[in-house]
Length: 391
Image 1: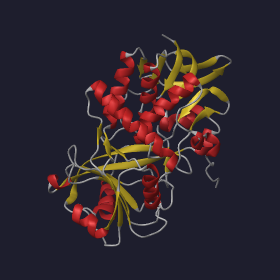
Image 2 (image 1 turned 60 degrees about the horizontal axis):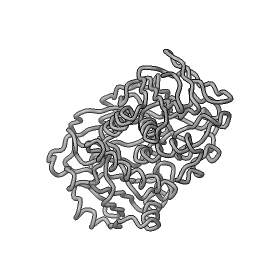
Image 3 (image 1 turned 120 degrees about the vertical axis):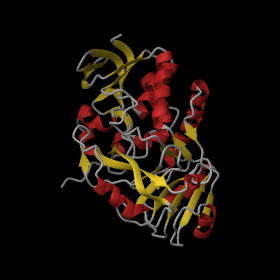
Image 4 (image 1 turned 90 degrees about the vertical axis):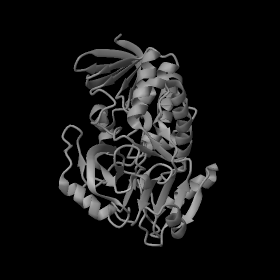
């Protein structure tokens, strides 16, 4: 089958969700990926991803994550797989006022406001309350915490695999190991050329992550940057202290400067996964350094873990890299290509997308088949994204 109603380019978080949602609506759909997802070359790997309901990045995201949580549970019922663990989530901040996270100031306060606006169960804790509940954290004593019992973690590889398998059962075609080289808009559709084949469809959904700018051209090259991130799995001296139920997912903003925050998970596999984020040095997905140096491990242990997470490290059991594809303001793009109405673009995630991906897939399916979405995507239009400042 080389013709379809919709071709989906890229089958990671957003693409696998879009493929499944299109297939369940009865569309003839083909999914293409240059690798064999779930894989380790993009942004949707690493065994766990944070999910939280009150979104400090902006209230417009809350309906997306609430809908995604519904879809994850539906997918679990259909597949029998465990995809979402609601182990609780803690966001910590010292009283730095303007602590940034994902490009948004006052992230803790914005999270609390979103929880109140949407009626999301939560608690606001002082340092003594945090320490009493979670003694694993080494606090200074001036921290405030937002605790959300419905937050937790997703298993990204499983989420992708389940959606691809369900889509195929519903008749979707999945072509992996096939790199898309060109998208050619036509009067009545889109032609998609790969290194192996040519496809035609009424619409195309591009969810190519770090490769999106190369494929989409201008103006996306002006608004997207790719950043290498490093993940660490550290040995816990007492693994039970970091087990789900005793330790939450967390985001800790201990300062207001660039990189003065990190995040982590309870131990659900070997080691406790922790990481920070950087948006200083950009890269390209085909040229990125994927090996993690010992110096990077030591710098992370000394700069983030020591004195903050008790009984964790110094042994690093493993490490990995992943890619963030980001906009200047840290927000998504969910829109048509400005020069090709039949090409839909599904989100550079800017480092916080997986939790929303199930709903984004549904949005893309609705836009492709019906021309509109049940969820409001006006805040995610391309025109709202500023270009990167030119040196």
